[in-house]
Amino acid sequence: MQILSRELKHIAIIMDGNGRWALQKGMEREDGHVQGAETAKNIIQFCSNIQLPYLTLYAFSKENWDRPKKEVSSIMRLLSQTIKKDLQSLMDLNISLLIAGEKNRLPLYVKKSLEIAVQKTAKNTGMKMVLALSYSGREEIVSSLNKIIESKNKNINEDLVEKHLYCPEVPSPDILIRTGGEKRISNFLIWQIAYSELFFEDVQWPDFRAENLSNIIERFYERKRTFGNIE
Ligand code: FPP
Image (tube, rainbow, N blue to C red; front, top):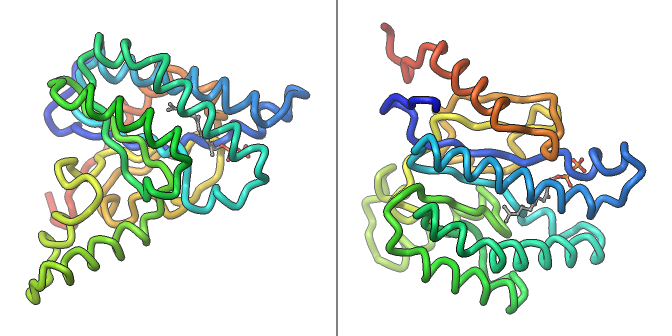
């Protein structure tokens, strides 16, 4: 088993390439998401096994709402079904689930299954897994600022903005991975990734395996992080 050093606490992943993976195989885009959910489960299990403290998965962006209705509905169904079906596995792995994003835009049945899973896993003490859903990094910052305005605090500083993000208990990612070959951030955790190490992988998400992640972790340890300082 891979041994993590304390400097690696949080991995965040943009799970890109489901659609292309399916189309390349003559399948429907939706089949790519189904296979993508299987990959997500394997990666969650691997991260829990190596005792990673925090994992964030970008499952659905604010911008994804603009996709054709059929695809949006199938991703929503898949999310709800997967969460319901695999809730016991989350319990067995002692994982607690958190949601980042504008939950109110989600269909009621999805919100319900998420709420049940968040509540049921709240006391688990193992890995914290954040699902970014209906998520936009810019919107997260605006929402933080609005909460500060409501609190009437006039001394806005970085700590205060951080305290009002969706999941203030989650530290900034050490590693940000994007699969699917594109080199973009796509509005993901734009506040939190100021000093994250970025990895853009050519493999499509459904083909991403624990070995790929293990290899990224090894490459991460080879990088020098100075956070703007000098050695
Ligand atoms: C990006 O690929 C993927 C999505 C927008 C959806 C991801 C959702 C899942 C994998 C389900 C996860 C479920 C759980 C419970 C973690 P894309 O469609 O943008 O691919 P493309 O760039 O090839 O078109």
